[in-house]
Amino acid sequence: MSVNDLRELSVQELENKIIDLKKDLMDSRFALATSQLEDTSVFKKIKKEISQANTVLTEKLNELNKEVNE
Image (cartoon, rainbow, N blue to C red; front, side, top):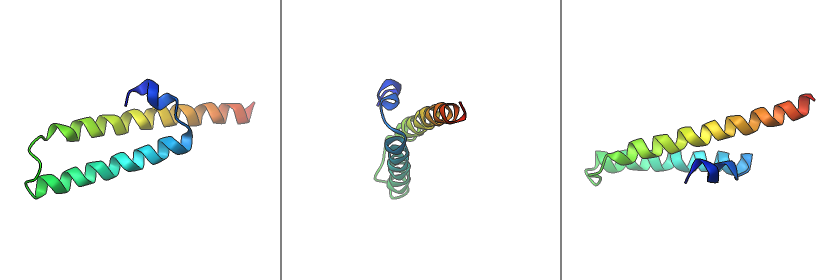
């Protein structure tokens, strides 16, 4: 999912997306521990998506706070 796609999501949808990505990361770690995962690049990809979603979420929350303060 690209950053532009993430920007279209609501705050609640972003929070749910982050939770799902963290579950995927945990599942990937378990798969690696049980030797079911050979491609370890998924860790970097999932972490990058989590970071992007957190950044967009922070931007949206800052916008909401500015609107409330004005």
